[in-house]
Length: 57
Image (cartoon, rainbow, N blue to C red; front, top):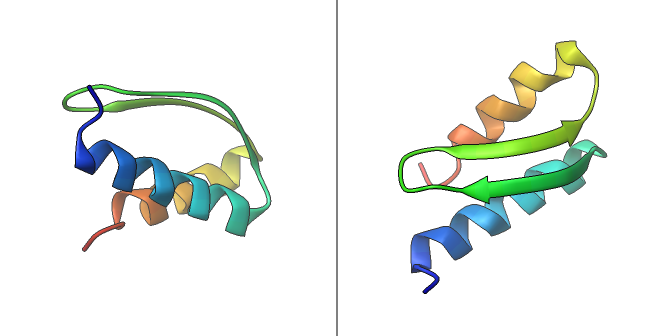
């Protein structure tokens, strides 16, 4: 069963990835962490992760 916060997190990830112009190959939302395969330059990864982590603040 999908929880409401999973839907919000999925939308946040989608917004950040599309805004950044990257591709998300796969993601998996777990109870206390997320796995993602994102196509981007290594130096850009920190900025993208900061944006995702700040969603909902």
